[in-house]
Image (cartoon, rainbow, N blue to C red):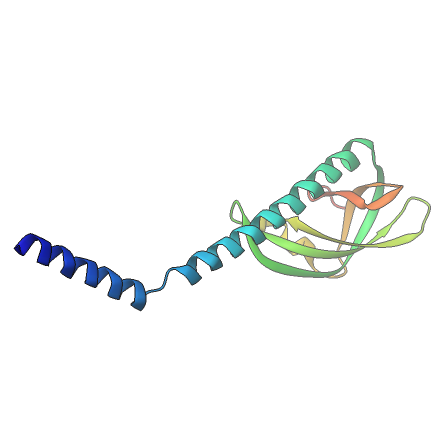
Length: 137
């Protein structure tokens, strides 16, 4: 008889804990955060594919940073930065481009407004570009 009484007591304690510390909202928040992270990773992967295309088949151009803002995300301990760029196409036409880019911490100083970056860009779609962080303009 004591065994069943102890089981009932444990069951009641578990019920009290579930009521005191609801897990449903925490699970919903975690699922929402995971969905946002997956969406960001998909966007970054798509941008990476476009950058690879631009790197291999694009033409040289110059981009001027007009604004930069950290997104709060990190990849491999490097911040993801939203860059607003003014890309001067080879024909001289400036094109505004906004993109999220994982920037190595050593290159963060090049994300300041007014900085010029060497890029390779798809002439048909300036949103497809690759930033050369190493080579100065």
